[in-house]
Image 1 (spheres, rainbow, N blue to C red):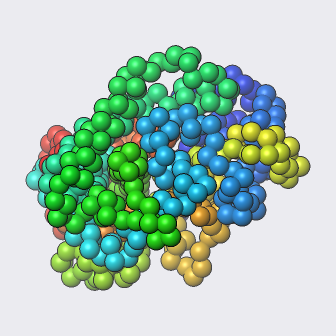
Image 2 (image 1 turned 180 degrees about the horizontal axis):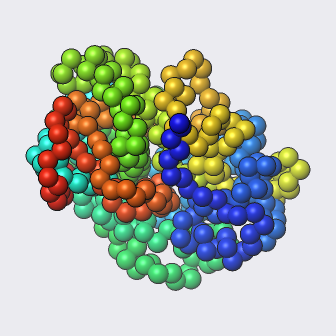
Image 3 (image 1 turned 60 degrees about the vertical axis):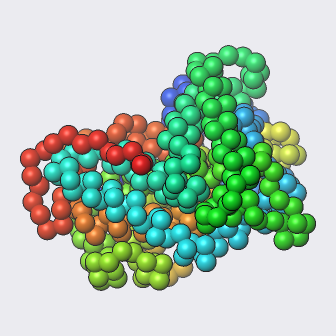
Amino acid sequence: MDFEPVKLGEMPKESGRATFIRRLLTNPATAAPAELYESKVVSPKFAAGKLVYVADAAHLETIFVERPEDFPKGRIDQRILRPIFNDGLLLAEGGDWRWKRRLTAPVFSPAAMKRFLPDIVAPFVTTAEAFLAAGNGPVDASGAMKSATLEVIDRLLFGGEREIDPDAIMTHVENYLAPTPWMVAYALFGISPAMPFPGQRRQSRARDGARNILGEFVARRRAGERSSDDLTNRLLAASDPETGGVLSDGDMVDMLLTLQAAGHETSANALTWALYLLTRLPAVQEQLIAEVDAVTAGGPVTYDQMPRLLAVRAFIEETMRLYPPAPSLSRMARKAENFSGVAVEAGAAVLVPVHLIHRHPDYWKRPDAFDLDRFLRPGRPPRTVYMPFGAGPKICVGAQLALSEMTAGLATLLQAVRFEPATGGEPRPLHRVTLRPADDLLVMAAPRGGRLRPKTSFTAPRAA
C-alpha cells in the first residue's frame, strides 16, 4: 500500500478574504486556493486581477524561463527579504543580477564541489556519532540537521576556524524571519511599511545584528592574508569574466548572508523531512542502506562515489517534491497579462504554490504518495512542474551544492544509523519562508544492526 505522508493543506473552495488573511497569518502557503486543482490559474474574487495564483506549467514557463524580466521578484520578497539580504542573488535584478551570477557561478563549479566535499561529510560523521552516543533515545532530528548543516556552512563559507559565530548570525536571521506572515499580509494588501506589526522592533535589531557581524568579518578578511581556501576568499578574489567587476564589502555581506541563510535553512529542513520519511518507510531505508554500503564499502563518502548514490539522491529529490524547501514563490507582473482567460493587472502579485504543483494530479501519478522510483526512472519531470530550487535562469546558484550536501549527508548518517519513529503522531508542515515541521521532529536512532536501548533524552549538539 502506498504511503501518503502528511501534507500542507490548501484554502477551501470559495473562501473569502477573512479565511485568506487568517491562513496568511498562520501558515501562508495554505492560502493557495483549492480551485487550482481544477483551473490552475485563480484570482480570488476579493483581489481580482491584483492577486493571481498560477499553477499552470505553460504559464510558469513564461514567467520563469521565457520572460523572467517581465516577472521580477514581487512586493512580498521586497518587503520581507530586501531589508536583510539587500541586493544579493535572491533579489538582484537585470544587469546587477547578471554580473553577480557570472561572478559566482565558478565558485559553485563541479571542481569546487570536489574540493569541498570532505567539509560537507565531516559534520554528518559528527552528527552520527552524537546519535550513537545518545543511547538510541529520542533524537531531535530537526535540531541535529540544523546543527550539521550550519557547521557545513561554517566550513565552506568561513573555513571552519571560528573567525565568526555562525550560530549568532542564524539566530538573528531566525528572529528576523519570525514575523514574516504579517509582512506577507501587509505586502499583498498594500499596507504601508510604516504600519507596525508584532515583532517589528526585534526584527530590526536582528537585521542589524546579522549584517554588522558579517560586515566586520568581511573587513577583517579583506585586510588580512586570505590564505584559507573557503568560499569567502574565493568570492573576494572573484571577478566578472566580462567586465572585471568585483564584489564590494556591501555586496559580500549580501552574498554571504544569502548563502548562509538560504543554504543552511533549506538543506536542514529537507534533511529533517527525509529523516521523517525514513521512519515511515523501513523497506526504502533498507534499500538506501544497501546502496550506501555497496558504494562506500564503509569508508567516507567521496566525490567520485556521488554519481553512484542514485537511490539516495532520488530519495532526496522525492522528499523535496513532497516537501519543497520554498513551498511558495512570488513574482510581480510588470505589465498586464492574460493567463488562461484570467486577467492579470500590471503590478499584480503572482503567487506560485510550489507545494501544490508538486502534488498536482495533472502532473504526477499518485501525487500524494511517496515513490522512490519517480526519480530513478528515465527522464526528468518538466522544469516548471518540479522546481525545489526555482526554474529558469534564476534557478538557485547553490542547487548542486545543496543536492551534494543532502545526498552525501544522508548517506553518511545511514552508514552508522537506522531511523525509527519516536512517537505515533505526524509532524505539521509550517511555512516560514521555508517549509519546516512546526515542532521539533523526534525520531529514534539505532546503531546499524543493533537493538534499541532504553530511551534517554537527547539535545542536538550545536556547531562547534
